[in-house]
Image: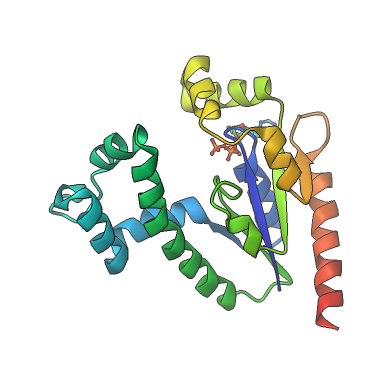
Length: 200
Ligand code: ATP
């Protein structure tokens, strides 16, 4: 089974692209959703977070004190790296277990920080969903009802698109002029063919 990573900057349309793959019955593991779940369910991870960032990191009902964590890591790259060093291995483990349960020729692993976290290195292929910055800003402003400045701020915090392009094996152009469905179908057939050769 092939493991294919998929990422894209904010508003690039990676979730939309993953939905098309899901329509083709390809299972998608969402690393960001998994991280959110594990932070409140994985006992080892919870203990690590509490010991590094204090017991106040969690409320009495077990939910995460997001404001506390965000305040600590937002302006402190070392603390952010420490948090990631707890969360990323837990997500990686959950993902590996999930992969074992799948039976399709290939699976997708969606992660916002695919390249930043280095997790792309353990995949057979990696896809970048790309779109012009102007379009990404307009999409997120509409979807999240936020200002252009807020979106630009978030874009600034991500790895530049050009750098991501150098690390990706495939690029899906979500520029609204080339049909997404055609691009997804072409990749789908390519992965199925590669997977079938791998089996032989
Ligand atoms: P984020 O990183 O912020 O979660 P994302 O990369 O997952 O973003 P989506 O949520 O898939 O991006 O897309 C952003 C918005 O743009 C959504 O409202 C989506 O419906 C819209 N969108 C994405 N692709 C297209 C398209 N080709 N045509 C029209 N609208 C689109």
